[in-house]
Length: 246
Image (cartoon, rainbow, N blue to C red; front, side, top):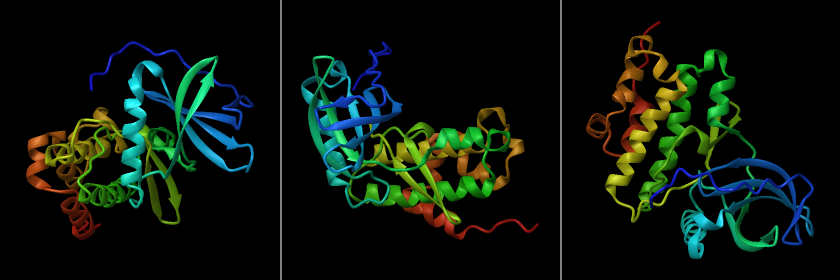
């Protein structure tokens, strides 16, 4: 899939707007290249849902929405995947728009969690706890022959639960059939996320612990692939490494 940089027109739906005759918009959640996501209420039941409205020029013949719907359905038993409900054909300003209706998940986008943290970075323990949850989820996803394809801090929802973090993936990217190459790309994205969680490129390698430097691996595909052959390898490493003595 080739991504153009031209900005698509915004749907810009205000709170209270009724779409499809049966959903009421509560708030705008976020947006991406393919569309916009809104928190909605199903008027007949009061159920809270999420609706991703796809920009028509980026959803030719419903290719994008069908990719998402089928992938979410295949991965419905994976804990990091948002539960898909159904697809709706809506009219927005008298134009046809396809929307994917799914469960609404409470949580904070990872990029916002990082920005709200002291110094714009998570502690080493927090960052590795989130990385561990991500590795556990990817092990499930990869075990089904699938991949994410576009892991970054804006498409991961985080919810604190006691001493743990629960994660949900907001988006997937269609890079073709799942294979080991795409799964290894997910692991490289994990390294980039760890670097971002611990301060990003503005912090030099010398400001991070030796163990963080090992996990980040300079965000180099060859280094990461040599150290971790799979998400299971990364998970096992995080569960068994030794913290340095204080």
